[in-house]
Image (cartoon, rainbow over all chains, first blue to last red; front, side):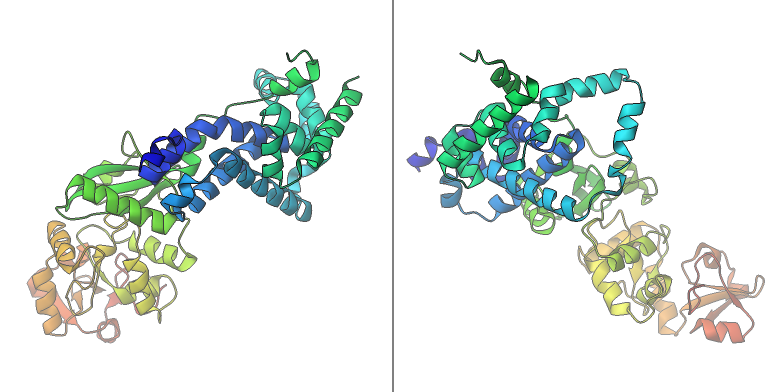
Length: 184
Length: 256
């Protein structure tokens, strides 16, 4: 059992008590997951849905794991991989069935003058740079967000995206190049 | 070393999720006093989702059983709550849960219909399984009604104990037949009287002053004085004797 002592608190808690472990997992990674979800989707409400869904799936997955498997788990890339799957599923469904209010939404946000709440929300959503991120192709956006917004090492981005490191690096550099061109 | 304004701009795009987001994912459990003793209750942000009573178990054993049952059924994290959801404690005390919100998302439409019909039975009264089946427009589904009631995630609050066998015996219950009998007596149901009537093949009571026929536990039936009371085996029999079905307890063979 000595081996368990050197585990991080998240995995230790997950082995001791699944629900307490989940609270620990959520407390440790909620900012990371939410920030990623927010910059991938570009919408606050979508980020909440994606984050909730990713953590719920993570819980359901880990409920079926035995001690050995939890001990061997790398919580951060594992959780981020789940998030990326949730996001891809969400994008795929949205392409197939676009939400009916999509057409009306821009009219709303252009017409109304910016109130206090809107200003606060714009600050929360990051303003111009966040808007530009949304214009990147999905693979570049994912690589840039994981590498430079939430600061994962290239090797971990590669694991999460299931791509070779070289491909990740080229997505990142192409994404950054495009962002520089757009901000110029 | 982050001199590059683009990179520092990107690094500044992190955000914390709103406070309430965890409650969209995890349910909260509390232990509260109920009519049979302490019960464990889980609620989500949608409402009360699960209630269990483990008899005179100690706290730790009850907590572990509850967590395991909840996980198997809902697949959602369960964290300790700091206070009971609004309305829960009075609902358990009074047997009336009118103001309480439930989270019945995990159930099928049929199960939800059964439980909604069960909620209409007032404290102190009982109805047969076939009554529920008729109320939800599925008169032949009496057995399925029994199964749906046995799977009631929130017993006591949605009063599945108020549905009994037509021979006057309480019948099966999630927490055991004995607990069901105790609960019904506690709510003031005259189970012995029902059994005596059933032995004489009486399942409905009519009043010759109002001309109305009821279930024996209907509050209208309980007011009939012995001199004016007539027992019937079926509503059809009462109707051919000139009585009409009560509009409160709705004993009619076919739902209106």
